[in-house]
Structures are given as C-alpha cells and as structure tokens.
Length: 239
Ligand SMILES: [Zn+2]
Image (cartoon, rainbow, N blue to C red):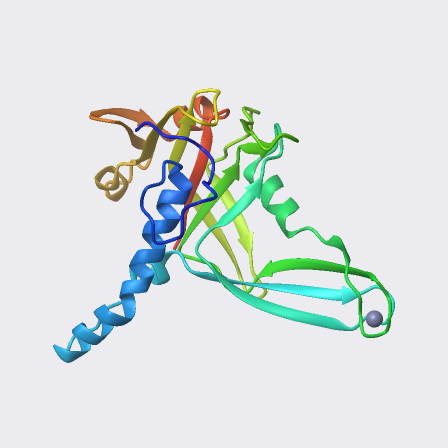
C-alpha cells in the first residue's frame, strides 16, 4: 500500500481521504464507534445484543494527575483511549517508550495557591484486550516540513503493562511498517500471526501482507527486520 506517513492537518475525523496508516486506522475506529449506538438499538429491537468491537477489544482508561509543587493539591482527569502514540526512543524498546510516556513531567500551571510549578503523570486505570501503539517516526522541522525518523528500536515479543488495579502480559500479534526514507511517500506492509497456527500452538507462524503478495514469515523475523520501520504495533493480552 502506497502511503504518506504523517497526519494531515486538513482532514476531519470523518474523512477517509487519508494516506497515513495510523490516521486511516483511527478514522475507521472512530466511524465504528460512532455507529455503535444505532447498531445497539437495532440489535435490542430484535432481542439481540450488539457489542462494539472497538470498545470491547481496544478501549482502556487512563488517569492523569496534576500535583502542585507548593501546596500539593491534586487535579485528576480520566480519559478513554483506543491506542497510545509514543515518542520514539532511538535504540530503545517499546517498554522504554511506554515508561517515558508514563513518566512524571514538569508543568507550568498556575495553582489557586499562586504557585506556577506543577508536575503531572499518567497511569492506566484499566487495560485493553488488545493494545495498539503508534510510534512517532516523524518530526516537524523549523520550516514545518515533515521528516521521517529511521532510528532502530528493539521490538520484543512480550510486554508487561501495569494498571492501578492489575498487571498483564501482552504478546506481539501484528506490526504495520512504513518502508522508505521519505515521510511524504513510501510503502506500507502489514505482518501478523496466523490465527489458525496460533490455535495449533505454533504461534510463531506469521504472514507478511504486501499488497497482493502474501508470504510466510515468523515473529522473530519481523522483530529483527522491522526495527527501523515498525510504525503501528498490536499486542494481545495473554489469558
Ligand atoms: Zn498549589
């Protein structure tokens, strides 16, 4: 699939004329969630139940707490997410990028006590069944053009997530990669576990979906080959 690689600034979330894979995916997820109330009503009128697949599989809650450095007063904010967008840590692992995302940061915010220095940090309130992560492999130059970051990262098979209530191990099940060194064009391919092989216990049997060409691969091979191009990763929570 041909595709540019960074979010366009002119398309509303209802528009499907996008070329960035992450933007396209979030637009589709938004549309599926938007249809959910209507489909629930239709299902209920027929004595059935409709469960939105996005909310069932991808949705999770995060809490952000802002704390005043002077008086210690706290403000809490809870928000639903279907994925996280992580800053790229060159040569780092996905866990390093998640840790950085959740790290406490300093904030210039005026508290009621008059102090301007606060800190804030985010944490998982709940964990999704499938965790979708976008790696920000692009940056804006001072001239507002977009460049791609080709830095190598470490993609591991497993990931441990911790929420305020529990922790969960996740296994890598799919990777979308952007090939090419230009942010405005390139080639996308998708790789993922063969669900039939997974049921047989041979979970390292993966497919590469490259336009009409579909070929066999392995998770180890994907982790090694896509260290400079992995863009969107999907981790499935272990039972
Ligand atoms: Zn204060």
